[in-house]
Length: 155
Image 1: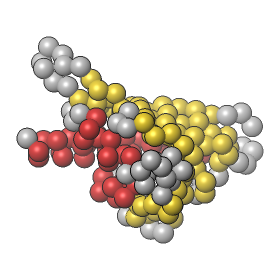
Image 2: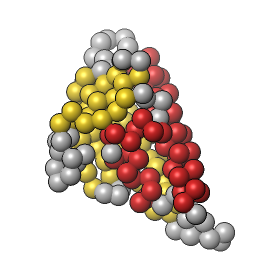
Image 3: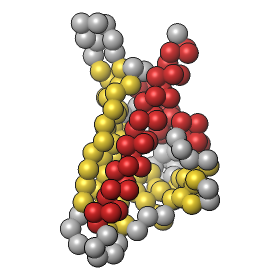
Image 4: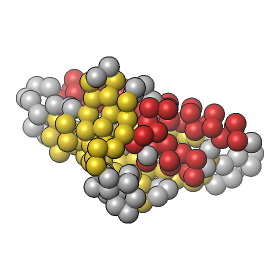
């Protein structure tokens, strides 16, 4: 089965310092996403949410377990799925990049969420990709909206 990949992106008005903890700290995902539980099963390094951390995310008792494989605050979080989706070799990278002030003086953060995986079962690649695209787009949209609200409230 051929590997599949896709990227979803968004733009927040908030700087990376506001966006990073929302995506990097597993416990915070339930604040901004559709998930009702999120947290760490195993701590990583050099901080609890860092490389090696095992994170668990659920909605209505169904979810996934992931392991952090890249940690470069406040720019890059990489993770693999350990359980929860019918995929192999799943890898996602969330990259945050500060946006320079334009003519309006506005700054912010570019959010790029890239995913690559292989379907576990023959004939399921397109359906699995469609579901993952929908989930990841939901994460990007929710993350950006929440970060924008947090940033506006801090002003």
